[in-house]
Length: 337
Image: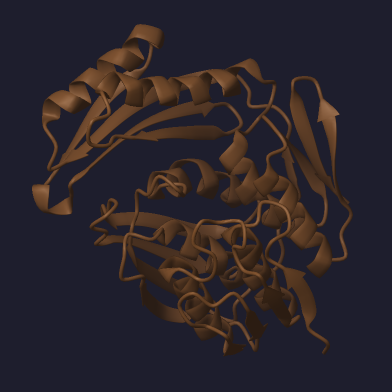
């Protein structure tokens, strides 16, 4: 079969093109060749987390791979058969565990047997959705589509130390149910969680106080971790609606006041609240593949980001499904079928 030719500099020009191509290549059996990988990033080519995603995809599908070296900007990937089983992958840095999981889990939905995947590295990374996002926002929607999957955070890992661990278990499904998610529904509750490891608990308290000044109805939690799981600090806000949940995050950093960490989170939450969308920017990215694999359905997103547009374009290259976007009332409608 002739490989698809992909240009990694197109669209958002980052790792999303590679991850989506790997997932869909495994599922469809279509090989691909990608050049100029992550060409729009300050450090182009394969970093550790991208290389781990390639290696994980190759192990799960028995793929033949060329160009899988650190810094490589060209990769050829020819998949075999997707196999269940027990897998373990170590990134070796604080690179995102969740992005590796989101590369291989869609393929394992269609494996020949149940699977478990353990990934070690960064679980809470400012450049990727945290493990809590998968657990609280992504997985529940997929279960509604017929996916039998669980994700467990076993150990936190922050930048720069890493050392975190996430485990996912998957049981195969025959087909995905269409996704219909155009409204979030009424707000059922919200919880603000401040996580600190090797960082003073007072930082968490100040972050939560700043959130409470704008969202007094939010429940508050402090997750005080052992110092050896840090140093690290992340502030998360979970919004639980009738139809779905969203999770917004903001990361602390040396010299950044706790109030500024909260302000960044509240800005993102406010933009979502002002929209009429079911899901926010980052969750929309992660729903494109399951929507396309289901063959029909729709969801509403707060905005048409470059990540979302790029994801849709890659899907169109691999799948014979009509995916389109159109403007709604204070939202973007993403449709398939």
